[in-house]
Length: 301
Image 1 (cartoon, rainbow, N blue to C red):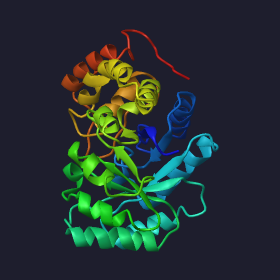
Image 2: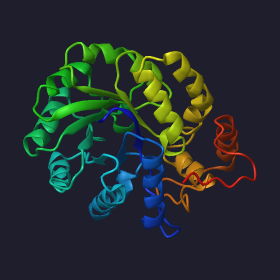
Image 3: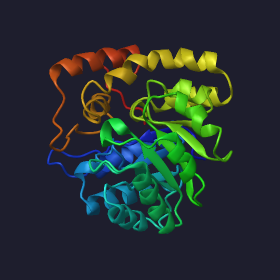
Image 4: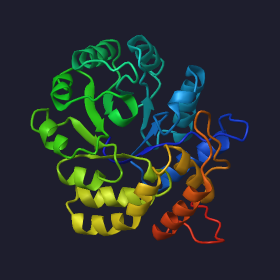
């Protein structure tokens, strides 16, 4: 179930910075229609850092409601305090979510033993499936393969989102974990190579606006048809790169508004609205990906 193209969903807001239920429902419907495998609600791309806990829970539960059982929902539940992550995780028990995505603690830079004890404590305090999330460029700490292998032996740690872009890690982890341990790329630029090396899919930013193409690429890759998968992915390569010119999710929110998937690209401080130069680059990338044409109002629903 949790493989293929999984979207790291943006959290749409209105111009006052409040959650936009209309746009969120539209996004969920878009992913159901276009075959996205699952939705990550309130991860990094969903602005988890600037939502308070009440808002965080509200967005996840709205996403669950709007999905109506048609697509699995993964809740972002990471924090840099173990007790906080446990508390947030427990809020979703018996809610219907498929799993939790738990990022490595950020800022306080724990040792590998600290990381092991952190995830072990969460695992011991919930029955919900846990997906580890390693993104050292954001968090300042790296969950190395040996620690991942050790954690994979715990009862409900079912996989990892590996967002270093280091493709050598796929084999290092895959060789020493159970066959059903899920390996998911967290890097759109290298995800296809990741799958070819033995990964199961991607948690994607690009999928927010190119859901059908990302789903098709993953489907072809999982069928072993990498030649055709690469031809489709070539159309998205400039977009993959352009969506990270400024801090995620600044560009993806603007792009989603540009193609009429959300009403506003409002983002919360300390992130700011997109620069004019990045808009120009993104327009080129959207056209190259055949997602946007000048003066065309796109509504994919």
